[in-house]
Amino acid sequence: MNPTVITYLVYIAVSVALTIWVARTLARNGEVFLIDVFHGEQKVAAATNRLLVVGFYLVNLGFVSLMLRVSQPVTSAQQAIEALASKLGAVALLLGVFHLGNVLVLSRVRRHRHVPADPQTAGHGDRPSATPAYGNPFVPRA
Image (cartoon, rainbow, N blue to C red; front, side):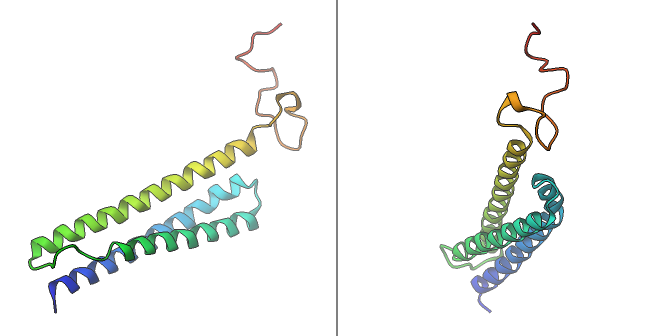
């Protein structure tokens, strides 16, 4: 079999396996975080988690497909390893960037859901106030 084709097959197998492993890990461990973000609404958290996983698969497998082609034919083991290293490194970086992006977005959502919009009404809703009962420690007392 052609060394270039073998390189392609190894790249596809490792990239798909890595994408599946990361997606499952994120889905399993991210659901607890999403439940907190959505204040215990488990159905919303589970649905959001599934949507994020589907998007994750689509983007990453699309990227893996676009990165498949090598610029020059692979004729040696060294060239195969170099091609695989650069391509798998790009896939790993993309996976990491998307993971970081998801965490940042969800952290912002969580933060905005926990902090009341109007400080005057803090503590007057159905959720606890973000400010302590004795007032804001950073504002001088009158």
